[in-house]
Each structure stands twice: as C-alpha cells, then as structure tokens.
Image 1: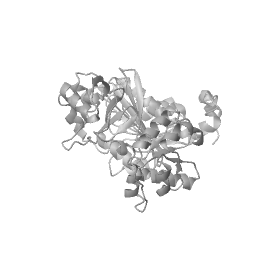
Image 2: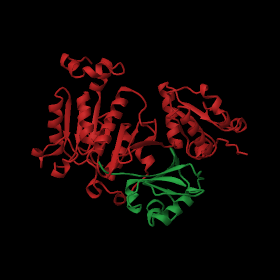
Image 3: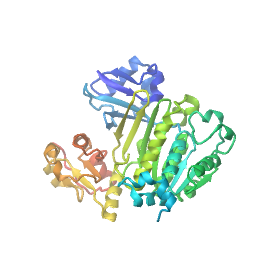
Image 4: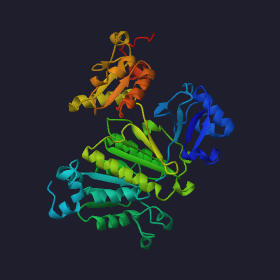
Amino acid sequence: MNTVRVASPLRSYTAGAAEVTASGATIAELLAGLERAHPGIRFRMIDEQDRIRPHIRIFIGRREVKRLDEPLRTSDEVHLICALSGG
Amino acid sequence: MNLSASERERYSRHLLLPEIGAAGQARLKAARVLVVGAGGLGSPASLYLAAAGVGTLGIVDHDRVDLSNLQRQLLFDTGQIGASKALAAQTRLRALNPQIDVIAHDLELCADNAMDLLREYDYVLDGSDRLATRYLVNDACVLLKRTLISAAIHRFEGQAMCYVPDRGPCYRCLFPKSAEGAVPNCAEAGVLGVLPGVLGALQATEAIKLILGLGAPLVGRLLTYEACGANSTDKSARLTPRQLRSLIDRAASHGTACTVVDVREPREFAAGHLADSVNIPLADLPRRWAEIPARVPLVFLCRSGRRSLAARELAARAGFEQATDLDGGLLAWAVVIEPEMTVAPFE
C-alpha cells in the first residue's frame, strides 16, 4: 500500500482526510484505485486526454512525475499538490 | 550606507548576528520590497519586513478593511473597518518603524500597471488571493527579472516558493495555468486564521535570506505546510532546457560557478555532450561526491531525464539538497536549444 497525501482542495472527495492509502504498480493504477475509493477525485486531477491538469502536480516523494505510467514501489509516498490561491 | 545611533539600537539583535551585522543591516536598508496584497499573508510579512529594517516597503491593495479580515490580518484593528487597506497598512507600518519608507499603492494591480509598479522594486512578495493576480505578478517578475517570493493558503494548508531570475523555475513553470474556479480562495473555502501567519512569516524569512544572500532559499523547491499534520515538506521542480540555458549563460556572464553533471555512460558522453558538463556515470556517483563542489547550483542531466532524477535523489541523500535536473534530458535539449547535438542511444 502507498501513502497518498491529498491536497487540501481535493479533500472534499476523501471525507476531509489529508492522507489516504492506495496501491498500484504505476501512478495510473494508483489513481484508478483512488477513484474507486473516492469517486470523482481522478477527474479533478486528470483530464479527458489522460493529462495531468495544469494546476495539479504529482510527486513521488520529493520527485515530480509527469507521466502516468511512472512505476511505483510500495514504499513510495505519493503527494498530490494543487495550486492554491488564498492569501 | 551608515546606520544612525537609533538604528543601531533598534536593530541591535540583528547586529549581534555575524551573519547579518552592520553590512547586512545596511543591505536590508537599501532593499526595495513590494508586498502584493495586504491580507493574511501580507500582514505578517510586511510587519516583519518593516521591523527588520527593509528600507523601502511598498504595499499594494485596492480593498477596504472588513470585519471578517481581522481574524487573521494583523495589520488592521477594529477601528479601521472601511478604511483603505493600503493606507491603513502604511499607518501601522510607519508606527512600527518610522525609520523606513513605506509606500501605499491604493490600486488594483492589473496588466496596465503591473510592469510600471514592479519595476520600482527589487523583491516582490505575492500574498494576493486571486490566481489571475498570481500569474500577473509572476509574469511581470519574469519579464523584469525581479525576485518573487510567493505563498498561498487554503483551509489548513499552505505552500511557498521563490523565483530568482535565471536560478530556477517560476510559478508558471510549476503550475502552467489554472482555471480560476478550480481553486477556491479563503472567502469561499475558509482558512485557519493563524495559517497565513506561518506562511507570511516564512515569506518574510525568505525575502530577508535573499536580500542578505544567507543560507539556502526555496529556489526550485515548493514548500508545503499542513497545519493539522504538523509537518512540512519541500518538492523540487525540474529545469526546462531554456531554464538550464539561462542558468549556464548567467553563470558564465557573472563568472559564478554552476556544476552540470552528465550521468550517462562515457560512451554516450563521448558521442555528444553539453559544453562544460562533466561526466560522472550514475553508478559511479556514490563514490565521487567529492568531485562536486558544495553550495553552487548543481544540475544533473542524462538522455531522457530518468537517470538524472535518480541522480538527484542520490544527491539529496548525500546532502546536495538544492540539486536539480534537466526535464526531458538531452533529447529535450536537442529539440529546443541545440538541434545539431548528437544524443547517443542508451543501450
């Protein structure tokens, strides 16, 4: 299982949880698992062409990933980052 | 720039720090900083910058003080409800430190005035509450080559990053664009009042570090802070070919150091490589750290960007926290910068 840290604007899909778990051999599989557990969350991050939306960034640990087929190890922590606007 | 007797008294705790001293305090006095938005972030940021002795402090905001602001915007008090935020901020900051110049810009920052206003300052702190303003401020800073210290908040979460011209990615590099409605602001989503206090103070800290050339600024990194999780982490962004080009050019024109490490195999390196890059294959890195100078910009690159990412992770564990890498590798470089470059296949 991977730990997934969820950006604040996406927590309406995780019942307010800042951290959830999901698993997958790739980021794409992990996001599919997240979608099953938290319906609607994937579309907030990924568009119809399977591209990461421009206000969303996905990190494995401290490293940004740009491709959904990026492989995952079970020990990896995934961070879902969203642009914030509040000041 | 000499300090008066009362300035020596006011800043005595700074003067005691060898990292600041009279020379550092004079640099703060000479600095010109613009705070965009006298809100939750701009309040603590401007108070600390004024207290620290930043010589010229501009505040831009076109709003009026509202009762609902006072839960977090410490620049204002109840008696100022309805007053211009820029002018009320100026009054408060002048009262805190009459020995600095505080300039109130009671106007709405827009495409027509942003360049003229930002041009007057060396450092810009973005504490605005609209994405459109964030992109406007970012783009003006990039065009004018101004340093930007950006932060944003949402409910219990905050994030911060710095853009220093030619040294790392800008806000738009990280988030290329954003639909305004996709990201709610404080008025829509609510915010823990003390959260902008943490992030705004962090912005002031970064500004002071950058003015003084102190420590490692949040360049090429995004700091995220989760108030309820009691932790913060930072993420490293990757360089585009154009950013690497300008980093190398700037180092060359200023005579400063910049280390570019090509982590491909010697055979690939021999077929074609970046001028002035050094070749340390990925597998050799763990026993060759001594060859890489500390405290200068460090960029890894490879053919496609996969090995350079691995190199960066190794480097972070070895203490090179600021290491970054070339997104897309030399394949991307050849497309954007140097079409004649031979990029050997990786077998």
